[in-house]
Image 1 (cartoon, rainbow, N blue to C red):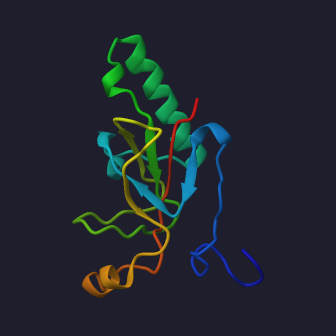
Image 2: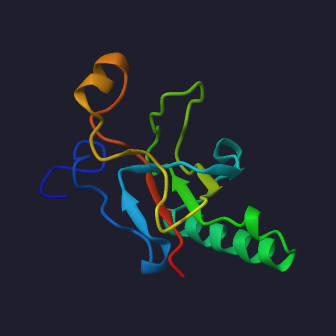
Length: 138
């Protein structure tokens, strides 16, 4: 962010990638996939910690022979509130652990700026996706 801009006023380019390369982070994105850990009741202090929990869950699932239930995708809320078109009030620290069929071609719910037609239909949405998300690359 430049000058007086911050994560709340500069959603087009803030906060940028905040995790290690193996986390496959894409700022302003919300990944799809099957939810393994419900983020409303699962909190972390950073996107990196959320990614690390995804890695730990994946190791545990593989050790138990549950590879199909291994985390390979994560979504983190870095703001006091993270808008989503559902019934939940999403807040700071939510960490969603998910699994994608093919992490090399992940399902994306939303990324970047919400389209104008979407914003007309969802008048309370911000201009850009507030979430940070990624897929494991190691």
